[in-house]
Length: 52
Ligand SMILES: [Zn+2]
Image 1 (cartoon, rainbow, N blue to C red):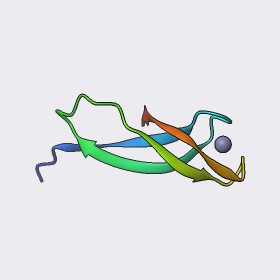
Image 2: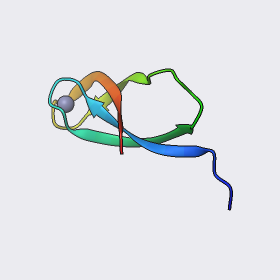
Image 3: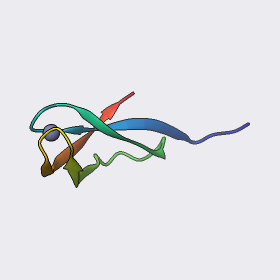
Image 4: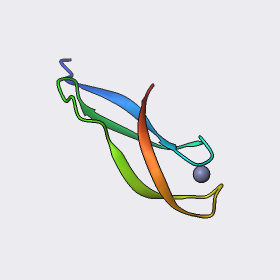
């Protein structure tokens, strides 16, 4: 099995809970940052990528 992807967490920048997992290509250099719903903050917050 060849895989060019790796897993990453999306971490809430407010409470630091890792609410989502995602995957992206190994060669990608950009940082993921998305507005997602955080059930701990109970609102949409900015989520940043963290390595697994
Ligand atoms: Zn949060």
